[in-house]
Length: 154
Ligand SMILES: [Zn+2]
Image (tube, rainbow, N blue to C red):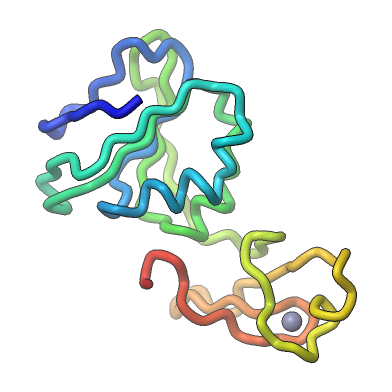
């Protein structure tokens, strides 16, 4: 379901219980949809692309009808910690959550070092650790290979 929304007021009517991801960088909503594995969830998802935003010019919004625990906030924080999370209950925003860079992420990005143990042992989890919060640098937990090109900067 795609709905157009042209003002800054978040329209959450019809969303009894759920989560609205606001201030997504325009054009990034499908990346987020994929990273959160929303296709695997049995719930209603509405993606709004290119909504007008005073702050950002254009933005994407995702509305998901599901309990907050279904959403991996660590993954979201890694993708873009400027996204605003609105928690909806009975058609109203009851809470706003701030994202932060997770200290560790598992199976979101893959190590590209061909000599890394994760390239050899296929069943190993891909774990990256935040080594420099200011510069937003993640390194492979096994070989310390730096992860280049965080998603939102691509
Ligand atoms: Zn590695």
